[in-house]
Amino acid sequence: MQQYYDITLKSILKALPRKFMKILTGFETAKFLDVQFPEIKYRQPDLLLELPDNSIFHVEMQAQNDKDMDCRELGYLHLIYCEYRAPVHQLVLYVGDGKLNMQNEINMPGLHFKYKIIDIRDIDCRELLESDDPANNVLSILCNTELHSTA
Figure: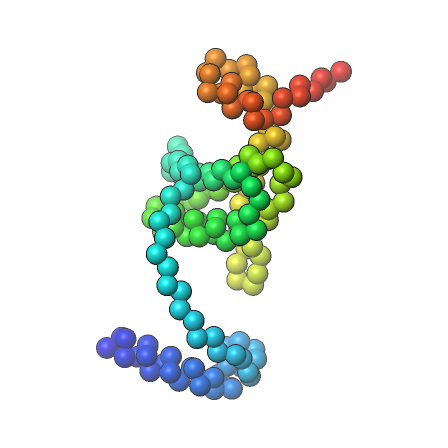
């Protein structure tokens, strides 16, 4: 029965009744976009961690600038949040050669979405170099290797 109501209301709204449209949108006219979004994707986050505070930490490693990174991260946020129902922290770790120039937010009426982007070269590697863990030492190669003196 619910589907019957959905179909009926959708057909009425497709006729774009002016007064109702004005109430909903603030405009009397609009262009109807008849679109479907068929999509079958296999999505696997690069790194997903559950933190001690029960929040989720999501890391994507990116070797090149991607003009659609903001939409990709929003898609991941949707999937991760709906699965775990916990706060999600997102980080894009840029490891590319070129200058980082990706957007890290979507800001529009009804939605302000933002995530963190770090260029690995902006990380001071001194702590990694001083570590006894060889994995930290290897990662230091990608970071800022210029040791800044405080003199």
